[in-house]
Image 1 (cartoon, protein in one colour):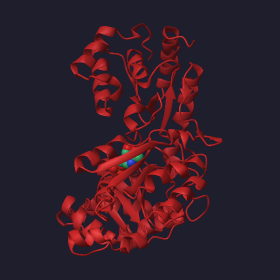
Image 2 (cartoon, protein in one colour):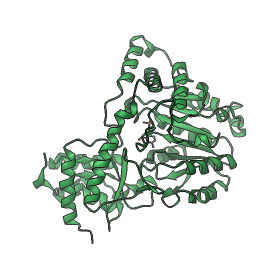
Image 3 (cartoon, protein in one colour):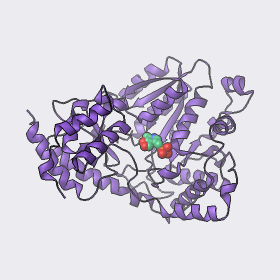
Image 4 (cartoon, helix red, strand yellow):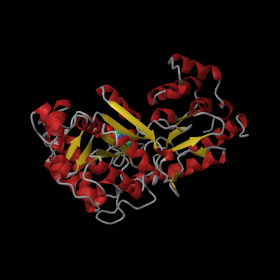
Length: 441
Ligand SMILES: Cc1ncc(COP(=O)(O)O)c(C=O)c1O
């Protein structure tokens, strides 16, 4: 159903919704605020929105997980505290999964379940920031996931960041080194594939990061929330190349954040795994000894910090993740097949945006066009990201400004996960009208 006559939506309805939330700088509106505005405009105007603001999985959860979880609950595990280190079965399967799809050797001991990657990053920031008194800052290779900066704010820690847009390839070395040289960086974080821009750092860039991490003794937090979702390659074959790229090939100072949320559509159960290198797990740090009276990075991570935060991770969700990892490694569960749907959606949506004068902001991995995936970034000539975000609302299209992601580029992040089949036609019509209203000069 295309509500032709209702587009653009009456500006009174749009302005009322924006004013009601009392947002001073619309370009800095959070995802939740944009959702609130688009939701209200949708309700008042009756026009269905094309929601591209939230990064929520839009697919059913992996059945293998759900069934394993139900079985575990029926066996009564809900009444028992999970072992704080993690269910042995999950630890074994996580280690096997990492070998099968990244080709890295990490012992089961060093694979730790967390209540979603969010808890994994929170714990990692905290422990990394306590290792050495002089290293008190987290470095973000941006653009990034805004909530992680919120975590730093909650903790009262420090962070620095730079937009990698101008520093791909060899240029990354000098830029990254300029931060690490200062001796204050406790850890560096980036996501790969990247939220919001969906670029993927190349092997040579990961090698630069890994080499510098070793040289300056800094910990790398590699956020693999979109594990194996670079659909340009078939990364879904267990124990066979090509593998998910990882900094773990180039340094021992690393920790991987593997989320069940996107790749298994399991966000609701808040489950993921932090897999740290054996060397990092067993390493002793002066700052940790002073604060906790001993321990290693891994033992403090688990027995001090995770214990204090949530005393472990939902028991049944651990059974689910163990079963999904196992089936994926066994080659009986082709998880990439399910999530490839996102790539197909992105391909169609990008074509529509490009046809109507929009451009992709982060368009290349050096010389190669970026993959189609969960997110992409768009700009419109002559408009800032904030202006574009606001200008699209009357056309029933909502996305978030790149400003909130640490990007210095003017544009929007669009997420494909909520797109329904009938909305491509809607988008085509709405962007055509948008272009008529704002012709490209
Ligand atoms: C880059 C990135 N990291 C982490 C997360 C959160 O993952 P989880 O649901 O496992 O906490 C997300 C979710 O959108 C994300 O985009």
